[in-house]
Amino acid sequence: MNNAIQYPGLPEERLPDPPQTQPEKKRKEKILYDERGLIDLPFLLLTVLLVLIGVIMMFSASYASAYADEGSSTAYFARQGLFALVGIGIMLFVSRLNYQMWRALSFPIMAGAIFLLMLVPIFGTKENGARRWIYLGFTSFQPSEVAKLAVVLTFATLMSSYKDKMKTFRYGVLPFAAILGAIALLLALEPHLSAIIIIFSVGGVMMFLGGTELKWFGLAIGVAALFAFIYLKFMGYASDRIVAWRDPWADASNDGYQIVQSLYAIGSGGLMGLGLGKGRQKYLYLPEEHNDYIFAIVCEELGFVGAMVVLLLFVLLILRGYWIAMHARDRFGALMVGGLTTLLALQVFFNIGVVTNFLPATGISLPFFSYGGTALLLQLFEMGLILSVSRQSNNQLLM
Image (tube, rainbow, N blue to C red; front, side, top):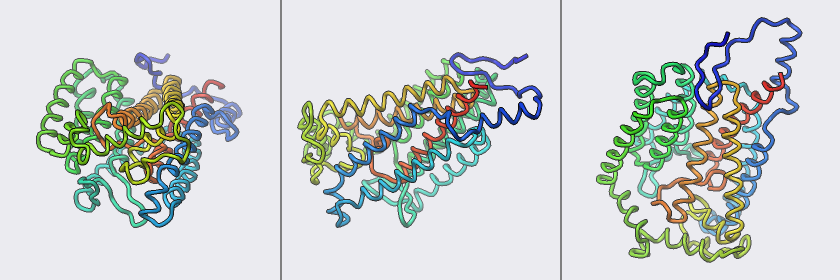
């Protein structure tokens, strides 16, 4: 009899299967690892479509700055296109793996992420007033991106182990708060407030899904508010961004410049846009036009209709991700997919919120669209993890 505790919205932890005859066992293994299908096709197609649109828009947004910086208008496009092809291959490969292996690897990944974050203040390269990147010789990457993945995997592993103890402070709050606190401290040294916000938000959602008592969230909100106050008080660049957000035209040539140019791009797109490749703000008017502010170029060239299509594709992908989480075959798979989907949703929300000046500038890229090869590889790796859960969930339903 299965005595595992059932949490609302999450599947029970799967108990070992009863003894089987050899032919039956081989038949189930064949179904479980069959290469000929059972992957979640809607999620896969939505991901590939967003990557394709993202690479095209990145080329349109970047060719002016690529020519100015690299002497070739296709320099950024060629790199991003190559990373996209490799990333899709990685996604398909990871989707073939048994996702249970990430339980054992979650703690080494977390240790590696913390180690990389400790290296950033020493060996990191400084851009735009922050030291967040580590240069590898041929490319650079942000260890904070690895930390986001590590938090999802580690939290899912711990919550699977503590499934009947999550209501207690010792098991349902303390280990997760310690992990989040350590990562937040390292990120504050860079400084990288946007990554702190994302990681805390993802961690909070996973704790809610995992069964942490609601009373602890009130305390967490108070601590987060205190941390934000201290951070804004002593990190001048962050408070300057708040001022620019409230009235960007008050200092349109300095702190508010990027926001103003972004709003010009969005407004000039109108209903149907100026046409693909015909935008004007990318000609060195809008900073980071092919990176954090690429959605402004989408609005300018594809208009309101095109921007809504892109948003609809993201919404469908996110909803499908949560659907996969709800149909996962065990608690670890449900929490991992729920965390990764929440991570994707938050990054889309914060990026578009910043570009439209709904939120203060935070430096969060738009998944699948913003320039950055290693970030795209990691995002597609995460999509592969979701697909691996969907493959085994679908196969499980067929057994």
